[in-house]
Length: 607
Image (cartoon, rainbow, N blue to C red; front, side, top):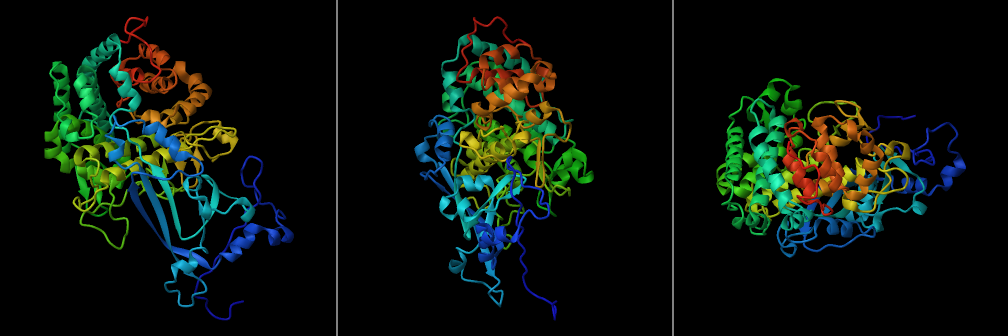
């Protein structure tokens, strides 16, 4: 019994019950622990030993390197082999950074410090005990990780088993994706593409450029998907109708490529003109639902979203901004690639969208710059992925449904930053003093891909998957993993359903859209083979047209020849707003195992 009011720090430790065979922590029935077990437990002894030191603040920093080390899991080698196959897709790899070193540093206090003031960090470095998530432990140096024989307790959270780490500093290395507007397989295939296939796709592009155009009646999300579709159509038309454009658009020096010339077909220029007119009008607030700056919270929001919290998917309360603006960034990057005047005239407009979702400054609340945007609005650096939730309170905390659209955001941010500033551009207000902006967007992209492949993509049994084809951790139990895809991941739950339905098709395809060059990096062949065989193939024949293009695209990753035949039965203007038949045919025909020729297919698409 206390004899006077207590002022200080109390620490309590939960000693978890043993895990069952499936890796799920037990229910904690009375008597599950006894005194003998606890007194001999290496984990309990560790908890007692480290009890006096606790964290009071955290800081995240990053730096970029041209060379890096490979951890014991070989993850970085796997990533590099997948996304860094050559210099054709984003400049010479010898001239750009390949790796990012991410560092977490924790400020600590000790209960032994009577003044509760600052303590000597060096003396506490080996005493702070924290728990990491699976993706941290996979990438970190093993010297600070407590092995099972040194810590026999198992702590589990919604993201799987948490790994004990000793020390006030964590650091790990991410390999940065190096692709440009097309992946290396696509560039190789385009160079040798059959003339009949090329013409089939161009004929479809001509149709799609006049009948699937964006409309200003859409909300910001809908317009973003539509204008990104138009932009990709423009890019496809350039790549397939002018061989020189295909080469020039991927050189390291973007100053030589932004005005990639085309002297062949008038429809290509007409498509570019349409993209310029529609996107510039939108950025100038030519639509009714205009974009505005919220000076209270710091960010770009829609007028309708400010007036109605439920409008525009909650955009006015900062819901889903990375989904919405990712499409606009992607479209702006393509327009900037082919029209340097757009970058000069509208760069500041697009930068405001970039800042809203991928700002690299203001990570410390004690010091902020003159631009009132939060540090990486949606990205949670500890969890290793974004959360889509804005200012809305939910019982399960923040959550995210469409992991692929989050990846699309940072892919668009990377492409726009590369076009706007080059390989060393900045994503903050002090452009002259920050030289890593484009790499920063690449880091966000790498993190989001790793997060999606670790915590959304699932395979049962002991098959292991993590980001970019690396060796994987077993995050979820086998029964749950038989769903192969998490629909919505919250801070306190992971479910195989979506906001708009429980259909397995919705769960998988909302985490697949849109279809771009980043798709086969997010969805590697190993995963898709299992996902398609066990889930998608059973739904394939009955998929509604709006989603059908995406399941065909999913199949194309493992069987592009069959996917080409399936695409012949699609109706372009009935597909999702972000997709047309032209984009799907382009994606299919640029897969490395595609062998269909113009004269060998019994049914060629023409819808």
